[in-house]
Image 1: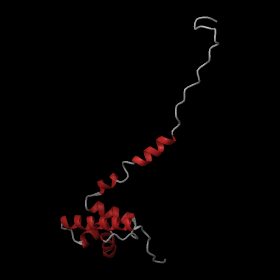
Image 2: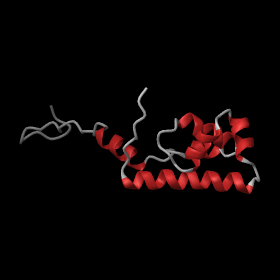
Image 3: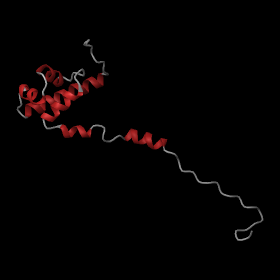
Image 4: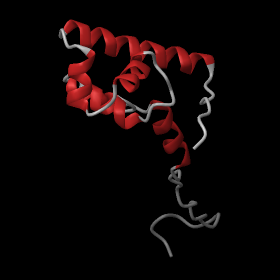
Length: 114
């Protein structure tokens, strides 16, 4: 299997690095060593190192395992919870209610006459 870099936009790369830094900070606040997190998450130390550096080649499942070990798995449910753009697009594609056209009455007829 070839090892190739995953191309990312610069803003996405910064977000990955920031996520890795937040995970490292959370680990250190809990005073967990890398070995402890690796053992509990069932991953290797180089993989945890890559995660904490925001390497995009690491599978998202490993990120989830680290979040579980750190007790932050509940935060994962907040991702894409509010989708304002998607809701607007969905609302635009909904059919618009239309009224039936009014029946035209002959010029000389009134409402009660036939």
